[in-house]
Amino acid sequence: MTKSVAVLGTGMMGAGMARSLLRAGLSVAVWNRSADKARPLAEDGAVVAADPASAVEGADVVLTVLFDADSTAEVVGGLDLGEDVVWVQSGTVGLIGAQRLAGLAGGAGYVDAPVLGTRKPAEDGKLTVLAAGPTALRDRVAPVFDAIGARTVWAGEKPGDGQRLKLAANSWVLSITAATAQAVALSRGLGLEPEAFLDAIAGGAADSAYAQAKGRAMIAGDFAPSFGIDGAVKDAELILDAMREAGTEDRVMRALHEQYRVAADHGGTEDMAAVVRAFGT
Image (tube, rainbow, N blue to C red; front, side, top):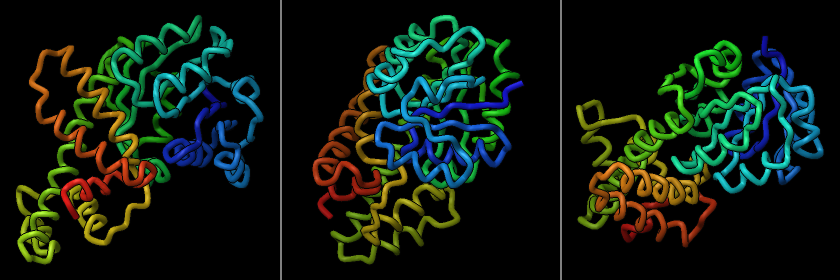
């Protein structure tokens, strides 16, 4: 039975996931490259480790929540996880990244498990886990997934299957956020109060909670990060790589990538809602 979890990466998502694991009664050790992001978790009951090797010592499951494949490989590549450990890789790393990281697992079990959700669902244990891995490992990771997520969608058994579903889902997230920014900017440009656009779609078939939340953040100029715009740029690049592999038309995603990149140049640590700046407002 899984009782102890090491969380490597306690940034925007990892800190909330660690707290959700603690609330579920699991023993949690945490590590982060910037120690000040891990230290507050001690107040919630986590053991704050000085290095990754100390964090994973004795853990049943190692959960990585790092920015990309390179940073994850750098952290995990020097660890000996052992055959009794399951490594749950929750970063969005793309198709090539997933294969690369699976090769670093050694004898440990490997579950590809990116998540859908932002800072608040991570804090509340309400993420959607998009998992892929051997059926034999599912019971072992269930306590972790039940703690961090409202539901788990098993996308397959091969490394990368979870990433495939995450990239498809994020293509929609990036699209709807940029489309909302376009409508907000156009409303302003036409001399309207942009709230009128959100009111017009409210409750109808074209409405979504995401459009309302991001749209209101854009109107207020509140870009406190929930899904960082630097992550949006990175994910758009991974989606473009996947589209080329799949042979699907990528011109819309190329345009979206450029809009997020332009906005990120103004503030890479802001929320993805800051893409509204790329539309001239």
